[in-house]
Structures are given as structure tokens and as C-alpha cells.
Image (cartoon, rainbow, N blue to C red):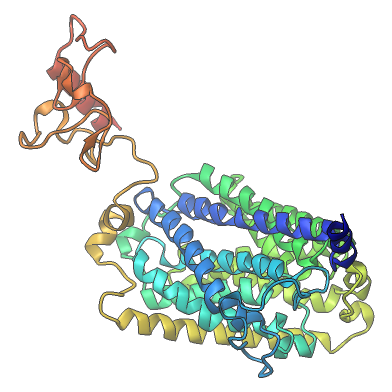
Amino acid sequence: MNSVAHRANSTLYDGGDVAFIIVAGAMVLLMVPGLAFLYSGLARRKSALSLIWAVAASNAVGIFQWWFWGYSLAFSSSATNGFIGNLRNFGLMKVLGEPSPGSPLIPEILYSFFQMEFACVTIGILMGGIAERGRVMPAMVFSFAWMTLVYDPLAYWVWGANGWAFSWGVLDFAGGGPVEIGSGVSGLALSWVIGRRQDKELLNFRPHNVSLVCLGTFLLWFGWLGFNGGSAFGANLRAILAIWNSMLAAAFGGMIWCLMDYRYERRWSMVGFCSGTIAGLVAATPSSGFVHPWASVIIGVVSGALCNLATKMKFIFQIDDALDLFAEHAVGGIVGLLLNAFFGTIEVIRLDGVSTNRGGFMDHNWKQLYIQFAYICATCAYSFVVTAALAKIIDMIPGLKLRSTPEDESLGMDEVEIGEFATDYIEIRRDVTDGFFGTNANPSEHHVAAGDRHGIPENDLHRHPGNVNGFSHTNGNSVLPPSHDVHSEQEKIETSVSDA
């Protein structure tokens, strides 16, 4: 009993704050499959699974990098150079129960977990730059190097105890610089280095599964509430306001984008609504903890409109930013950061009970606008130059070429890189009539009814007497129907395929 009483009296942190950030971090993790489904739905069917794989695998790389030295490079409190941390916390050494660098409300070990999820989401966003033509294994090498040389310094600038942007008073609540501009501008640079898809792949390009786009968007929206709300680092009024601001910016961003698409197409685009929702959430990332809810309505409207217009910039740049990383994440982040200078207010900032930052024009802090603008310029320039150089260097290393061959691109990244498919209707062959009913079958091949995994049949249907080349043409009882004609069945299938 004495030890329990001692622990209760000596604890530094409120249990509600700790529990809230644990849950918020878990919510941010859900953004990883959200990104994977979003990217998969936006891509062609033949390259859909490769993007899910890239996002999922980059999450694993991000966890390793953050534990290895990423957290130390981004948040070590003993570094004083203003640009990047040192290795004091290498392998999470000396990261336990001391107050975190970001807030005295939570312990450093919890803070390191929460910030790790930010890093993993950011590298997941960047994986959209390899869409439909990038090789996934070299992309993982690039991911580790990019987190070390781009994300970690950007995070240290604005969140590190001695970062130059933090010391200068930049207002960036949950990552307009490291997360949004970092991923968006870097995505543009990566797409530039990898190069454009073949012209035939650019023709009639449209999302292959809008349902997945919608599912991914709402998973992201849910996770974003933990992303922004948790950045108050406690269960406090500032967290509640950040969540409210995120909801408003997302809703108005989605409506504005949808309306802008309607003026061209006279259709209510689901993809447009999802894109605008994400644009609003991106703009809320740097601003949601600084502004009143009425300002988030303006932020949502402005971000939805400008991000929609920015989708045309890739044609001006002649860069194949297939999933519009720059238009949504970079432009949205810039909007949120700039509008902080106008609408940020100390009245909101102090709601967490510990922060003392000054606001923007609302508090007569007129110099905040050029501080925000200079920070945006520095972040954009650093992200683009370092990412482009890093991608070019890795691309020149034997075996790590980032771009696939034209033949592989035509086949699709799923066929070449993964060997599995996000959506596969028939497992017998890629085309429905290839080898069907034995007419084109290779007699040396043995097929099994439900697929062959590692050479082991999944069931014993191939032993039934009604089985033809491993495909059972039975009525469910291993008996052919009385009037069953294999050749007439084949003719029906070939006719239906030609009609489709």
C-alpha cells in the first residue's frame, strides 16, 4: 500500500492527458491504411496493390528509423545548432519519464511515440510520388534516407527546443512544414526525378475504385482528429478546439472543391469531395490549434479553392505528380501557415494551460506574416532541393534504380513488383479465356481449384471426377449436370467477354 501511495503522490502527469495522447497516437496510425486505400483507389487497377504495399512497408521503415535515430535527430534537447538534433537519444536512450520537449503535460516516452506516428504518416504520403512507375524496394531505401535528411531537420526547425523556427516564433501547430510541405514539395521533387509515365499510361487516367478513395478519405479524417487534437498534448480545451477546427475546415474544403468541379463537369464528383476534404484537413494541420472556429470556415474555403486550382500546376511544371501531392499537401499547408498570421490568437493558444506563444494580426503582432512567409520559403526550398538530390543519388546506385522499365510499367507494378493484386477477379490466368476448359491449356501444368499457395493445393477439388484442368464444372456435388456441354460453356464465356 505504501508503494501505491508513493506512486500516486509522485506522478508528474494527469492520467487523462496520458490516456488521451495514447488514443490519439493510435488514431494517427489508422491514417496509414487510410492513405493506402486512398492511393490504391486513385491508381489504375494494375498498380493498386503496389501503392498499398509501399505505404505499409514505409510505415515499418519509419518505425525503425524513428527508434534508431530519427527521434534523436528531430527532438534531442541538448542540440544547440538550430538545424538538426544530435544522437543523445540514439535508440531511445534516456527517453523515459521526463517531461517531453513539446509539452510538460506528457512524458517524453509517450511524446516520442506520438511523434513517430507523424513521421510514419508523412513518409506514407510521400510514397504517392512513385505511383504506377516506381520500384518499391528502392523506395524503401529512399524512405529511410529521406526521413533522416529531410523530415528530421524540418521537425527540429519548428518543434525542437532550440530549432531556429521555434525560437523565431513560427506558428505551426501540427506540422504544416514538416508533414505537409515536407511531403508535398518532396513528392513533386521525387516525381520530377523519377520522370513522367508513358504517354499511353496518361491517356484516360482515372481512379479505378472510387469506393476505396472514399473509404481512405474517411479513415484519414478520423485519424486526423487524433493528429490535430493530440497536438495539444493533453485532454484540454485547446484539443477540443483543434478537433472542431479540423471538422469545419474539412467540411468546407470538400464542399468548395466539389462546387468548383461541378462548374466544369455538371456532375457532383465523389473524388472531388474527398480531395477537398483532405485539402481542408491539410490546411487545418498548422492552424487548428491557433484560430477560432469561424476562422477555420475561411481556411476551409480558401484551401479547397486554391488546392483545386493548384492541380493544374503539374501541367505547367511538366511534372507527373500523379496523385497531386503538391496541390493538396504543399499548397494546403502553405494556406494554413499563412492564415495563422492573420487569424492566430493567444486566446486560443493558452487554452492548453501551458503555451505562451503570441498570435498574429488578431493580437496586433504584425511581423508574424513575414515570419510565416520566410518559414514557408525555407521549408519549400530545402524539401525540394534535398529530396531531388537524394533521389538522384539513390537512383544512380546499382540495383536501386527508382523507375521501372517501360515494359514493366505497361504490365503494371502489381504484376512485376508484388505478384499479387488488389482486385483480381479470376485467378486462373490474367485473362478470363486463357487456358479455360482446356482448349489453350498447357498439359504440363497442373492447376488447383482454389489456387496454389507455395505448391500446396488449398483443397482437394482437383481429385473429383468432374474436374477439368483443375476447375470443377459440377453442381456442387462433384457431378456434372445432365446437359452440361464444356464447349458450349466456353463459347458463352468468349461471347460475354467480347461483348464487354
